Length: 188
Image (cartoon, rainbow, N blue to C red):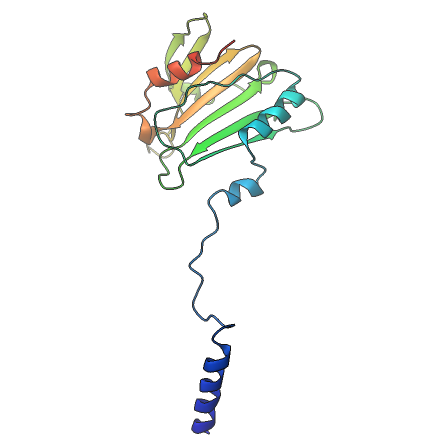
């Protein structure tokens, strides 16, 4: 009986080695696949969708934080056939090898802006941009005594509300002054 099992094993090994792989796959799914499954696409595609949905041109900052990104993805969240409170353009700049390199831009029609400032009591400072626009800098609320997740700069321009967000782990590289420079880089 043992001899039959050994012969069967040798036969399977000899003839089945090209088609049977008993080792677990070490290939991992590409980083962006999860984002694509959730409706993310190229920034240009998402901007065009939201421009059509909002019925207005969207101008984005031409400057980015001086940190490396491997991916730029975006989606137009259009809650219904009409511009409503859930409609927004969401842009993600990510680095698949360094999770702290995370920068986001959200754009919403000013009339349907985010209810209140997303950081409520954590407003740190108010600034005035060169064109006279008021910009509010703050952080996301800290959870359970932990450090806030993101630094935010909120301002309105051309009837749109913009929120620039950067991971707080990058605040030494991306200061409030850098966020202000990015906000100023929206060309009219």
